[in-house]
Amino acid sequence: MDGYIQTLVGIMVSVALFLIGYRQTIGARRERIKSANQSIYKALLRRVVLEEYTPKSDDVNRLINGKAQEFKVNPGDLSSEEQFLTQIFAGIFDNDFITQDQRVAIEGRITPALNHIPVDSQDDGVTAVANPDKRRARVLLLSVLAVLASIMGALASLVLLGDRFTEFDTRGETVNALIPVFTVFIASMVSVIAISVVKRARERPDDLLSRSNAMIDGAQFEHQVAAILTKLRLPFQIEPRLGPLRPDFLADVGGKHVAIEVKSWRTPPPMALISRTARYMQELLKLGGIEHAIVVTRGRLPGLERRLNIDKVQFVAYRDLEGWLKLQISGA
Image (cartoon, rainbow, N blue to C red; front, side, top):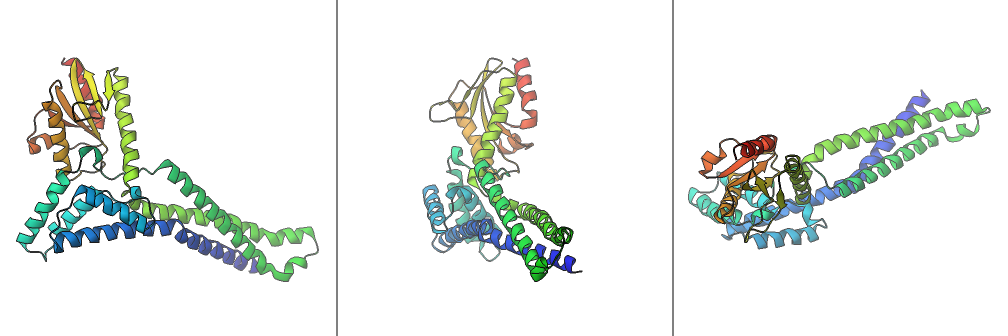
């Protein structure tokens, strides 16, 4: 019975120390990011509602950078300017305590700000990809916390032996007495690893707010699109300068120039963002020399061309891209 109590106490000590260490390191950083996002949102909401402030992209970015310094976090870990403005728009739209005239006036000030965010700097929707360097640092920190907590639990289990440890006469008795200590170490490691996995799964939505993560995911998606163009042996340029505009790719598909914009949207984005992207592609077509303009997305967005009333701009899902390109080649 003493061995079971010794093992249980050791595991409890390990788990408690791991949770305390987690909260003081990774958990503290996440709390600062969450608090900074809330502070920015409340500051913008107060100015927009109480002072009839018209948001400007530069002002929102300065506010984000200032709050990042105040809360000691990286600006790239905070929500983007578009996410803040969209959140405010949704909050105003869903608020029953604001009169219709006030709501229309506020939405009229927010919508132009959303539409004037440069298309090259817009957020490409939520992602679940983490920065590799941050991921490695996180794994290293979790490993150190797990090992140290397990060692402390094993030591606590050893302390429970007290003076009995010196009373054992044979090596066999000593080994038998130390078995619970080793058991505590192994069981503690398994416990803290399981806890870290669960906490990671629960906290995963916080990573979706990261602008730096969205940039990494977007770059990876662009690489996948480039791989399809290479597979079909289509000549293409990366971010060519076409007047003041720069699409992600300009490909020669069956003798036709096709401008390709890549958007790593994992969920349907707001219509304002879709409309702005469509207008950007139409501006490319107006430059001349381009027969088609397509926006490649991760998932299908059916009926957008009809709803937006746009011509020669198509939204093509990644899974359909290769077939679309082959159809253009065969129809050339």
